[in-house]
Image (cartoon, rainbow, N blue to C red; front, side):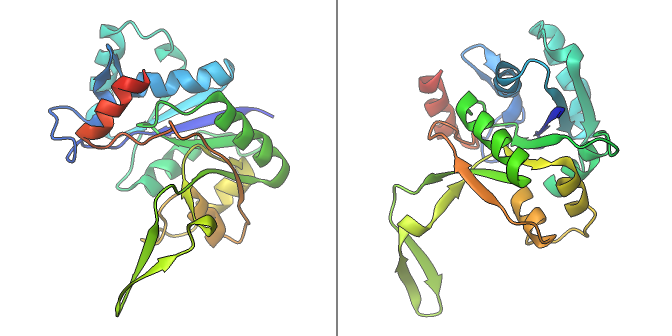
Length: 223
């Protein structure tokens, strides 16, 4: 089956206190988003990369690719993002052939340290079950807020969700025909709401989502 990677990069960098959106901030001389795209091409050089960007950032991305002489730029399909992440993914899905079953990954543009193993496991499981989501264990204790304050939860039964979340294209397209709901926090929640079960796969601890200045410091160390 053909493989697609929808990279969603709609951040404005508000929590980063930066002049440019977080996905464009360089880490050791290369923008975050370029490192993210490279991770998927290392996994499969033939993968179709679809990049969802806010319309106001598309020209900036093009200029950035020229500035860095980014060799993968020509093979990336750029689509206009939507009002929310849900709408951005829906827009990107329109470019995926509806007549041929394929595998579609959806990944946060600011997760550049996803491992080949994490990507591969998710694609392999999605080919079997239709929907795969990488997770890692919580190393912290967890408490749930309630009307009386809070209560400790068994962290062994809780998982931290990562991306890429990978699906059969028919499963994902069906799910995204639903109306938007504020309860949709990721693609797995959209697919579950459409009645399809999710299978968990192993993520990698380094697969952090870069959203704060502290995350950038961690990213420098990881590089």
